[in-house]
Image 1 (cartoon, rainbow, N blue to C red):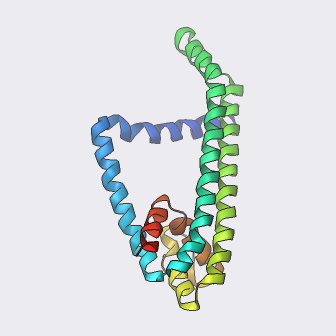
Image 2: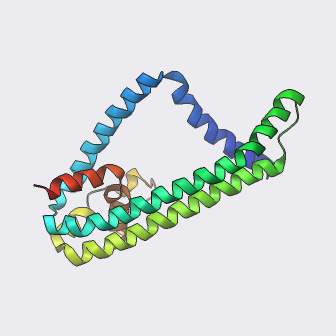
Image 3: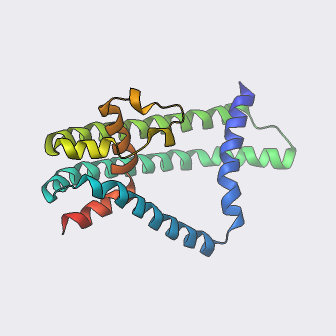
Length: 196
């Protein structure tokens, strides 16, 4: 059990540490800017074929705004929890470095618990937004628009063993909402489209 927790933490930290260590702050900023542009193009590619009207967009935006506020509040809560925990981490790191002590299992267990709680809360926020947005889409969009959203993504690109033929239209729409509509770039796209 201890090894599994440690391996999970080590794997997560290794992934986070590898790429940034290779780039300067300016290089990372340049890469992030370009990747954001690519992501926006991808979101345009997903959103434009649905042919949302201004009225439909105006019904969608408040739900996205509520989701963004909830997600931001969750991030702030996570930040407060982690800052409150930082002193314990610093003390543990100092003992490891200075005395060669193994990290206390309770410290690693606490990290695992925190990260699981964070993930569960974030998932609940996303799930709530997906349900609300699905309700808006089903109320405001016509069948052709719903089909365009449902069939826009190949589920196998996101879940390798997914079988699109066995997925319901609701499951496909959920996936599109989760991966496209609540993407942070889509909000700005919809705001721009609502002004045209």
